[in-house]
Length: 110
Ligand SMILES: [Zn+2]
Image: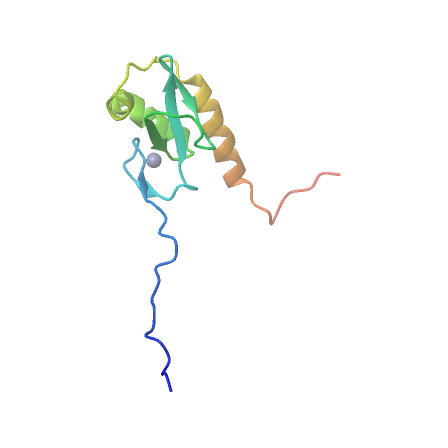
């Protein structure tokens, strides 16, 4: 009579850890926003669909500022990056606002 098989401790789908190039903090894929350079311009790639070398940032404009100041973008992406990072800033600010909106205690007017 076969005994129960050996207990298989399966690490459930290890989520790769990314490092934010701004603050160097770590987070999972869903915590960070991927950015890539397309023709010298930094653009957000929220669905991670654009091929090529990407970098990761927290959805926080402060992290983008840090990355720009440290010249971490060009280093991480191995490319010349335009100083105009508006496209990514807009995306990060939107995500940031979404995260801050709390479901509870929403002030209701009228
Ligand atoms: Zn960060």
